[in-house]
Image 1 (cartoon, rainbow, N blue to C red):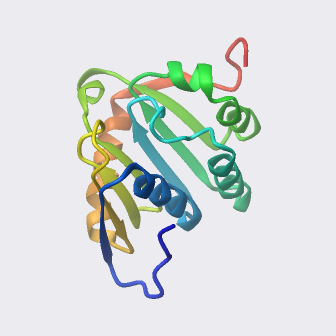
Image 2 (image 1 turned 60 degrees about the vertical axis):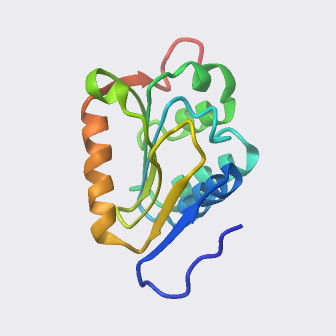
Length: 167
């Protein structure tokens, strides 16, 4: 597991394995205080429905009534068919958790991104490869990632809701 830094100085770590990326995801969920933004092809690579991730996301959403979780994916089929824990969170926190599907230019994006509080992020430039960069306590770099996510979010539509038939 990647350790939390003792200082608030910007830190950059290069990740080269899937395990390192998944550990970085857990770390960012733990660091998030108000907002998590996650963009991925379909979440199949992220183990987003594992009990460990579920508990981390649930704890994040319970930490504050203003906490928000924004999820953007190219394809929602994996979430709908293989993520019952994530869908349970959506039902529990429907006012603070949002799942969108990309359209247009955003549907062609090849990277993956997890952003916590516009301060920390992990990004894989190519979703099919495990190489990634983790940036901590870096407001300047995180601002660019926030704008990247915002572009994707603006080119997406609500895709899964707590009131969808069958949920």
